[in-house]
Image 1 (tube, rainbow, N blue to C red):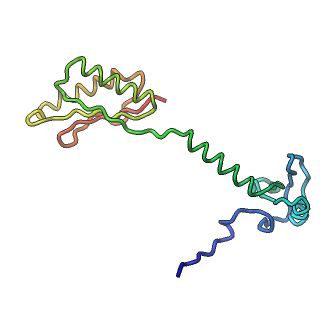
Image 2: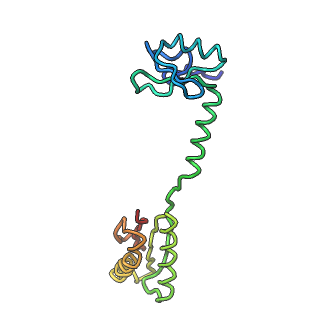
Image 3: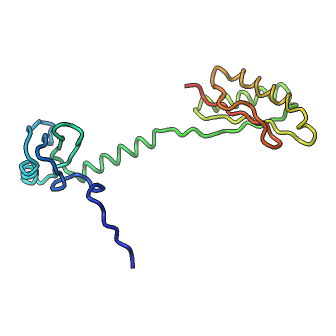
Amino acid sequence: MPVIQKRRSRDLPQINERIRFSTIRVIATDGEQLGIMTPQEALQMAQEKELDLVLLSDKADPPVCRIIDYGKYKFEQEKKAREARKKQHTADVKEVKMRYKIEEHDYNVRVKQAARFLKDGDKVKATVMFRGREIQHSDLADKLLKRMAADLQDVGEVQQVPKREGRNMMMLISPKK
């Protein structure tokens, strides 16, 4: 048997009979100010036009309500929220891997890759991998990562300084704002 949860009145949208204020400022569908009145009077006007009385701002003094079609209003709000979500860019973390004995051309390719990622608004995790006894030369890897940070300083800034994690040394660079 499904459990039916009773919705609290504060969770429900403030429309029609749920508006509990002594006086409210009412705005018509065309944006015209109808003045300050009681919620009962405003609700009667809304019902005559076969529309809803919707609370827009309860922070104002007196609270502001509008006579509109609530279904249409709710749809418009959801549409705006969808558009906003579509336009926002989440910063992903892209990784550039290399070894500390990297050749100059390969290094330049990695720097260009990292610069492209930073320009796209993503963070870059630069990783230097060690194999076998190479881990003894972590100072060379540190020098390489600091050189990369210097080469990328015009498009990004170091968010996390080079540090060793197991058999890797990594550094995090975020795009400049």
